[in-house]
Amino acid sequence: MIEVNFDKITKLSKQERYSEVLSQVEALLKDENNLIANLSNVVSLLKYSFDYYLWVGFYFYDAERNNLVLGPFQGRIACTRIEIGKGVCGTAFKNGETLVVNDVNKFPGHIFCDSSSKSEIVVPVFRNDKIVGVLDVDSAVYSSFDDVDRKYLNELSLIISRIF
Image (cartoon, rainbow, N blue to C red; front, side):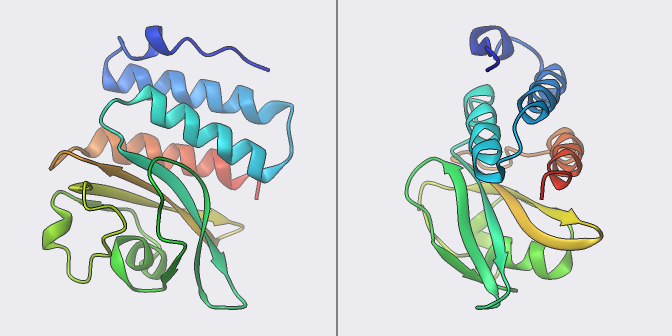
């Protein structure tokens, strides 16, 4: 079990915070191989390291039902299933690319799981070049996510892909 000093992390710059979080994720994954346990700790680490994160969690691809199903998350109750190509998560999954949405109200077909959400970033997670899910982060503030978030959350996705 690793000890995380959130008081220390939250005083760092955004870039330093992400660097610290990535190091912590590596440590978390080192001695545990259970996917749900690991992803649960990752979303908790993210949620409590970034004050502008309203909701953070994973959606996994369910091949049997051909949609995304809710995985480990931190935040308010979320949509349980999302159709491929629908909303920000379904679109990011379908296109296999990270999406940054500064104003979710302007995103065509946005799914309102939580009306408090104003901006969002969704990062695909791949395993052996096949998309297996997405990491979804929402903020209650417009335009919360930028190239720093994109860069480090994409790096996080690469780290996570090793445990799928």
